[in-house]
Length: 269
Image (cartoon, rainbow, N blue to C red; front, side, top):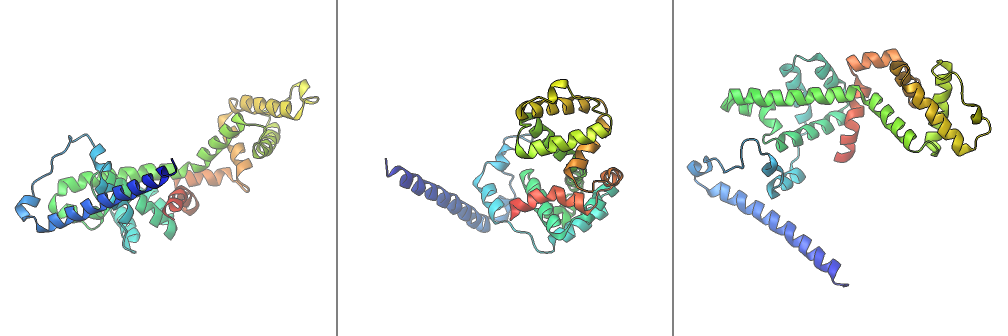
């Protein structure tokens, strides 16, 4: 039994070695294969089946070693500014920090690779020179994806508020959740979304009190969703300004932009 971990380790190293060896052999064969043979399309599982793009050693290997040129994120941003007529998307990209833009470009490049093409083909107009119609299709894919990311960035505060409310509902007695619930309840009372607390609140135990607070907050959430959502964000974000948030949603700036790319930056680190 003591040899099992060692055997598994050797097997794992052997598997990786085989995958890398196959990659190198394939590259060597591609370099020596006549041009007419290389031009023949490889067999696929079907135009709508993308699984084969992700479950291969080549894709796994490329995802590890592919690196972008230092200036590629800036060139990508310039390409989007010229290719897109959506000011929300272009303003969002312009508002990204250098690290945020770098992380997002890597994220988008991986998405393109997963979909069967490379982002650099569009940015450097390689695909456009060979097949203009296909290039337009790929461009629409990228721009639609950028729109989705911008919209996700614009509502990060709302999404974080929802996550906090879910956490509070599941464990209202937790230390952070308890503080959150008490602060939110005070704001709800000031806004007349909670008018009275049950009589049993006064003599309740700490656990029972937190449960009563959770019930009062849940009831208030259905009275005025817009006001309730604003008050939740006021508790979560010091100095929160509802009007500023509305403007940011329409045209997100650096802070909202980097919030969405922060997770990707952490993954890339």
